Length: 221
Image (cartoon, rainbow, N blue to C red; front, side, top):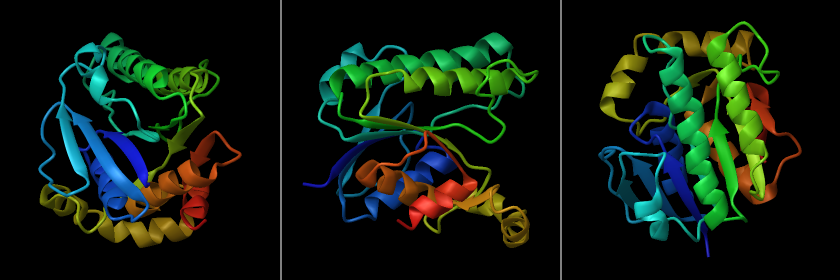
């Protein structure tokens, strides 16, 4: 039997790219996309669960058991919203979602897409970085089989990403090869991110935090 995986954020670039890599991998049996609206994709392995409130999964709990991994790719920018709202979405909703999955799937690998610059000490001057750091730290305390925090930088879409994502990328995509060469820890492809998540789910990994270089390396395992 192949892996059964829950993915959030599939209406965004990262979640969509990770989902597409998983669907294309023969070791994956099923992908459950949980989002607030349809992601526009169909595939024999793909099931969609449309759910508005990640803080309360009680109505759909019976659909969330029996999964091997969750790739939590949902997120929001701190630009233009209050600190309280950013904390509610980034920390409260993520932890509530993860706690439900930990209860239902204690053998699960939970992977959280964080971001470069995240503050693990929770004491720095940047509010968003402290909140991300607290989210990472508290996810690690939950009773999952494995928990990983991914901190990719600039990401190159996969070829099957939505057209609006690809059209946006074309305006700055020319910088990717240069940046990759000069700053290998700050540039990844979404194919690498998805492949890395699958590899560490299957094989494990000795680090909790994966930056760009670790993502590239584990994608090749």
